[in-house]
Image 1 (tube, rainbow, N blue to C red):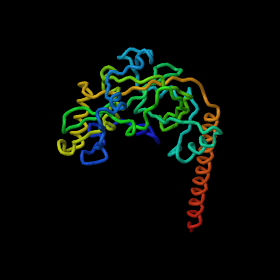
Image 2 (cartoon, one colour):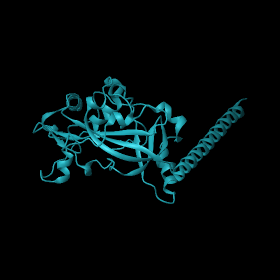
Image 3 (cartoon, rainbow, N blue to C red):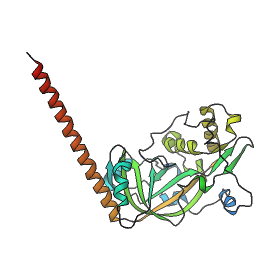
Length: 283
């Protein structure tokens, strides 16, 4: 989701925004083999929790998109760039400086029930070195949006051109899964998250081996499909609500409505002024 901050991703295409000539995509994602953290990150057998039991679904029933339930479940704010212009300032006014986590439809799978009390966040577990033809672990310093197991944060979710305050969520664990283990749905139903996984997967050596963005994206897609590359799945559990954050959303919503009202008033005044000028020009 980098975080997908201002609006929910609308999905990608076979020509994802991956540029093999962009050096920011080809970075050094490897360290010494005796680095304990890197050895842990390279362990593709980590199972802190069972994802499907946590979501209370079977693998072929995972539903990535639960956006239709949000309007009736959570307080929300809608508007162009509302996070930067209004919401962030309102949240920062909270007395205890809450820790917020922003996520969106391109990284999140919710349990398919109305309480929306659990979700998982999905990130690449590995990159790929095209020169050495092998996966490489992703370092946390290059993926600062990863949660820490045990942390509690205020979850703010972007969908339907709105921001929703979902509550206080605790990260209960992390599991590494192949894509086919995570979700056995038709790929079209998983497209938004799959596209984002592809876009965020770091690479090395792609500039000298792959010449087009489409070819690079397709190569990464195939490695997720055949199990060469894995995903990191973090489980988030609802544990409470922060009344100050909820109040900040309500305040930001009122502010946005006031701005929209002033804009409508200006537009009405401008139209009236234009009609009056036309009447004055008539003989």
